Amino acid sequence: MKIAIFNAREYDKRCLDRYNRQYRHELHYVDTHLDEQTLVLADDAKAVCVFVNDPVPRSLLKRMRSQGIQMLALRSAGFNHVDISAANELGILVANVPGYSPYAVAEHATGLILALIRRLVRAQARVREGNFSLEGLMGFDLHGKTVGIVGTGKIGSVFARIMHGFGCELLGTDPVESEECRKLGMRYVNFETLCRNSDIISLHCPLLPDTRHLVDEKAINEMRDRVCLINTSRGGVIDTTAIIRGLKSGKIGYLGLDVYEEEENLFFEDHSDSVISDDIFARLLTFNNVMVTGHQAYFTHEAISNIARTTLENVGEFEKTGSCSNQLIAR
Ligand code: NAD
Image (cartoon, rainbow, N blue to C red; front, side, top):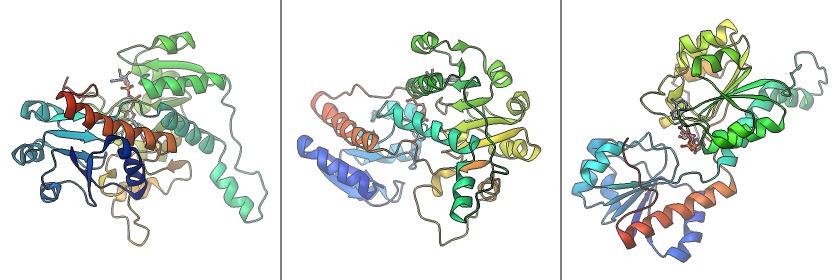
C-alpha cells in the first residue's frame, strides 16, 4: 500500500526503510507537518502516517476522506491528537502502536526522578567548573518513600516494578486495577488520597476529557509539601499555570516534565537560534528544581524499531483484511 509518511525524522526513516524490506509498502515521505494545506502532498496514498505532533481534527479527516485516504497509521501509542469518533464516523481506520516499549518511558521517568532528587545536573555543572562543594546538593533516599502512580497500564506497571525495586511503598489510582501491581503491594486509592499521601507522583494515564488538567490548583494543594511530580504522559494532564504557582510557593519541590501542554510547535525542532515566545514555558525553565526533556521518554533503539515494525504491520493487516487489531474505536 502507498503510505504518505508525514514529518518523519531521519532516525524514523532509517528504521521504516529497514523494516519495509519485509513489508514492501510504497513509502512516500513528506517532510512537513500534516494539515489541510499539506494533505495534498500525500498524492494518491491510501494511508497517511503521523506522529504525536500533528493534530488530526474532524475537518482534516473529512478532507482525507474526500481524497480517498482509508487509513491513518499513528506512529505513537497516545492518540489524543486525533478525533477518533470523527474518524470512526467517516470510515477512516485509525491504528496506533500500543506498548512499543513501556520500559523506555518508565525508565525515563525514573531518570528524571533521580536527576532531580540527587541534583545531578547541578552536580555535573559544578564538577566541570572544578567546584567540588556539596553545599546545595543534598538529596533523599528513594527507599521507604511513597510513590503515587496515576495510571497503572503498560507504562505505569513497569514503573511500579522499578519503584518496588528501589524499596518504595506504592499507591495507585486507575479505573482498571492491575493484578501485577497489586502483587507488588500497590494500594489502590482515589486520586485525592494519592495526592495527599505520596512523596513522589508520576503520571502515566492518557490525556482524555476527564484527565485534562487532572493536576490543577486543588490537586496541588492536596499534595505533600515539597512533592516530586513527574509527567511523562501528556502535557494537558497538568495545568501548567497552576504548577508554576506550586513551584513559586515551594509546594512542588521537584518537577520533571517530558511533555508540555503547548509542545506542538516547540518540541522536536531546534529553536536554539530563536527566542522562545511561550512565556509559560520560558518561566518553567527558570526554576532550578525543574527538569524538562522534549518528549524523548519513548526515544530508545528498541522503541523506535517497534514503532516502525508495528506501523508497517498495521498497514499490512489493513491492506490484507480490511481491519486491524490495533484499530482505535471511540469510547
Ligand atoms: P495504557 O493504556 O496501557 O495505560 C493507561 C492507563 O491509564 C490505563 O490503565 C487506564 O485505565 C488508565 N487511566 C485512564 N483514565 C485514568 C484516570 N482518570 N486516572 C487514572 N488512570 C487512568 O497506556 P500506556 O502505554 O501505559 O501509556 C500511558 C500514556 O503514556 C499514553 O496514553 C501516552 O499519553 C503516554 N506516553 C508518553 C510517551 C512519551 O514519550 N513521553 C510515550 C508513550 C506513551
